[in-house]
Image 1: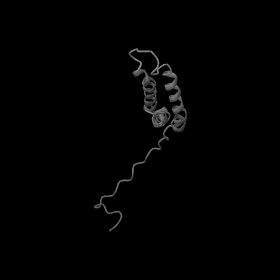
Image 2 (image 1 turned 60 degrees about the vertical axis):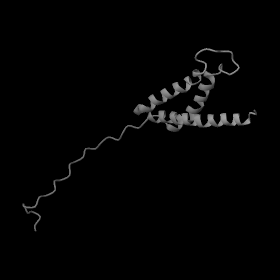
Image 3 (image 1 turned 45 degrees about the vertical axis):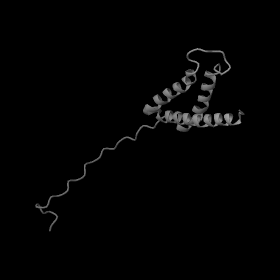
Image 4 (image 1 turned 45 degrees about the horizontal axis):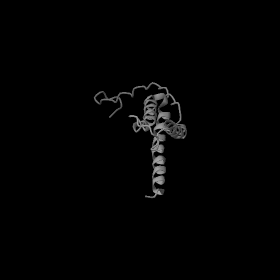
Length: 118
């Protein structure tokens, strides 16, 4: 069989691929979001809820739920930043920082409660 046999179908040549531009580098750093986000959340949480305490005589309707407002604001900002392609790394770092806040905050709370005597 010869290479020039017309009875045998030939494979078409592969299509030429155009050179694609490399994807745009993402701005922001996940590590920076974690390192700055966790302390910022602690500052926001403790600064925003400094007047709320069990011995405070404030009996307004928002006394209990207002402890979660700083976390909700932080979470909304982190989700918006994570959803945008240019700031997705930064937003992901902030969301991971929220996890660290929960982990460390829960550990501090449990440690404090374990030291209390009945």
